[in-house]
Image (cartoon, rainbow, N blue to C red; front, top):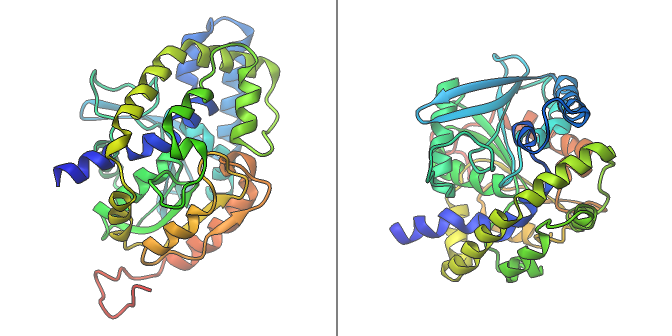
Length: 345
C-alpha cells in the first residue's frame, strides 16, 4: 500500500508539471513580482476582479488546520455544489470563463490549491496528490459541501479529482476530467514519454511566453501586453525553482507505471465525463479512450477540434455546453454503492 500511495503521490507531476507553471499566476503571486503602486498592478488587479465579478464569483478566505485557503464562490448555496480544480501552479482564475456558465444554476467553489507557488502553506508541505486530496477533503467538510459533490479537474486537478472520487465514492455525485494528468499506456507526446522535455517549457527570458503558449494552446487567447509582461517576469523569476522541481520529477519518474494509475481509475464509481483537446501537445487526446475504458461509468470522451491542452481557456463555451447537460442528468442518479440494483455500466 505504501508503494502504491508513493507512486500516486507524484504521478500528476510527471505529465503536467511544466505546463501548469506557465499558464497563469494568481493575484497574490503577481503582487510579489511588481510594485503595488504601479500601473501594471492596478491593471492586473482590475482585470482579475472583473473576470470574477462577470462570472458571479466572490473572493473568500478560510483557514482549515494549518492551511489558509483562498477561493472563489458563486451561485446559491442551496443548489447542487460543484468544485473546480486547477492544475499544478495554476490558480482558481483559470476557471473564471467556465464558471460564468455554471453559477446561474449551481453553487460553485473554486479553490487555489496548495500546489501553486504562492499558496499559504506550512514549510515542507507535502504537495503529493494523496495529501492534497486529504487536505481538500477537510476544506470541503469545513464548507459543508461534501454530500453529493460534483467535482471537476483540469490537468493535475484532474488527477486530484480522480483520487478524491476514488477515496470518497459515497459522496461524489459526478466527475468531470479535462486533459487529465495520469500515466497512460497510449501516451505519445515527448513530455509524457520523457519528463526531461518539461525543461523546454520553463520560461527563462523575455519572449519565451508567446512560444510556450503556442505549445500549450492551439489558439491562445489575447492577453493585454502589460499583463503579459508582468506574468512573464514572474515566471522568469521562478525559473530556477521550476527547473529544480522538474529535476526531482525526472529522478522519481522510473517508479511510475500505467498499472498504478489504472488501479486508481478503476476504483472510481461516479458517473464521469471526459473532455480533451484534439491538438493537445502535452497529453495526446488518444489517452481519453484509455481513461474511459478504466472508469466504470465513464461516457464516451468529448474531443474538441482546434483545441490544445487548455480547453477551459481556449473553448470555455464548448466546455460548458458539454458539462451542463451532463450535470443535469447526473444530479438524480443514485450511488451504485448504496443501491446494488443500479448497473455500474
